[in-house]
Length: 138
Image (cartoon, one colour):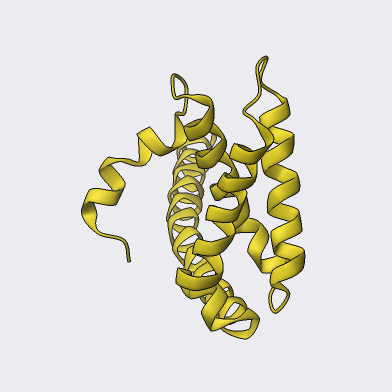
């Protein structure tokens, strides 16, 4: 799990307004790449190509884009970090899939309990209203 400090900075990571072109491209492309990596396990070349394409696409959206060499450096930086430091890349597709399934299962159970409580409360309210209605008309 990430440290508690990580949650405090989340709003800054998602709200990139006001950042420079370099930071803006880096922040948006890296978060995109973290999700994209699952489609390229075992193939660093295709991941590299996908990241480069995404960085250059995001760079082209600016009125005055960064020089190509800077965009390439951003893409290389993202790719290098993913392939050398990322646990998801090191662990591989099987571990990623098992972890993903476990996380989704836990989320589903948590949601099921919460929604079950709400459904039970609503059912009890309807039952009480129906009993009240029936006792008033009898």
